[in-house]
Image (tube, rainbow, N blue to C red):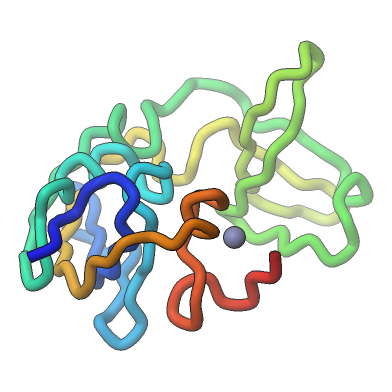
Length: 165
Ligand code: ZN
């Protein structure tokens, strides 16, 4: 049986809870998550736990912040004028977007809240500092196509909806 390793497209259903047992995110078998193992589609700690598993396996993975969305950095929210974003940007709390700092380094910032004409952004991912508790069921495993490998993510009707390149 095919097991999960780098270069496999994997379909999973999952529930993600925090330490307090609150459900943060989930995906059912009717609407599974597809990802490409080894391409950082998932947080590193979850990829590590899923490595070697096969269809039908149920995996309970506890992922530390360092292997998840990072430790929380104590930094004030930054204020960016709403007008600096495209009109149609979906500026909901939690949205991540890439920016370049003064030295040309790429970093990701996350929308914390939008108040009037000001967008408050956070260097922390909304789940930074959280220990992540995943309950995963492996639904399908297949080899990635050449295109998928080149792009670093799955394609196809149940993978990358609306994807066009
Ligand atoms: Zn693609």
